[in-house]
Length: 236
Image 1: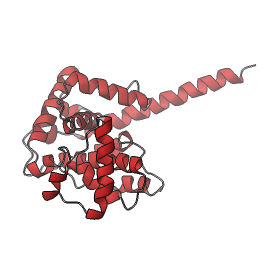
Image 2: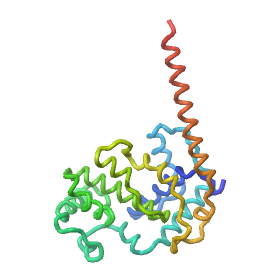
Image 3: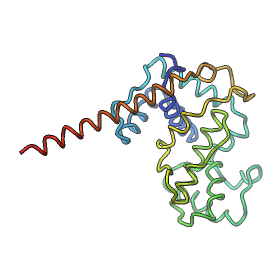
């Protein structure tokens, strides 16, 4: 199948894996993205999820790379490493600088990157989250989700992240939980910087339909297995 026929949730997962690595200065191959996707899906219990064939996956990674390179420079700059010099073009409130530096120091010691976009979100959330480790995690969650929305040319809607932040129901605990929301977001064909890529111009409803049907089938299979196990346990 072509990349336009890949279920949107799987497409968003592949794109997020590639974009996350790109933020760290790495350009992943199709095989590396596929391995990471399998690991993430297995952690969610979706070991039988259908992944795209080699050719479709290669086309998707190629389109993702080209679409990222076509993004405005001011957007890509936010995903470069943060340092004090970035404050000239990307200022943060002085009162938030101390905690941003703490996160930067912790990440640097652990050998983990810290982007300007993450610093922006750390400063914004610092008045709500006092624990530095949790603030670092939340800043990363907001940053990578914002990047995905920017990448597909849609306004950033952080409602579910905000609910989880404030302990309200229907929040999300990981980026993977957010994929079904991203799957419903169509690429904006009117964004001026978007190149004429097939992944952008040929998205069809079948992508969402396939993804939804796939998840429903997995749920049915899990329930059926549960019933069989309970039936064996009930026998004398």
